[in-house]
Figure (tube, rainbow, N blue to C red):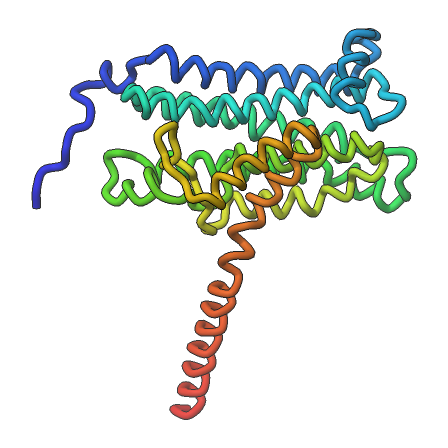
Length: 310
């Protein structure tokens, strides 16, 4: 058995801070923090004061929404910040790999930033926006959210933190077998995609003036949290870079995605994130049913064998 390859000579080399990739990670953390600030200002907008500029920009970003109030404008900016943090997170790892400037520090820094931007920020956004009792709700819903709203938000945050911690363990360069997870598919829904899905759906509902019905997102939020801690394989797209070639239909799909963003604005993000979230569960559903059926047959055979012996 050969000796394990030493990736870094000492702790100083492993903790080296490379400016460009960590700049994107810092941007991810910044926009996550800014989203939290916007959520707090939206919840307590009386202390924040009226801002005509915020409402004007919000009206431009959501042209289909009518009568955007100050609170909605802040929530909108909180959502936009999470989406910008998602794009920062998408670039930091690619920049590090393309430039050969990877380090253990960058990996840990990225997960810490993700826990804020894609764990705490969306959980706080959902808590203030849909997990708070409202006057238009029935008494049963008001009582339910009053007692469990904080718990639902924490479940999403907990699943995101567990997902990030598990990712760090699975891709640890000093653990045998990490190559499968370092360069292959993700195990479970990535936290940035989960946060992007929840945020983009809320953004779409704000655009349609469906703020009073946003509590319907609660089951979807819990389902997405479950996908994060599941073992369902999700495509990572790590192999895609500026020199990657693609089939004709893949290129057409990419062009259509760009056109979708330009033409449909806020709706496009919900479509793309939901497509990614449910692609793998639907793809592996038949395989999962076969495995469950096989296990059920195995258990029934064991039970029948015990009955015959007894």
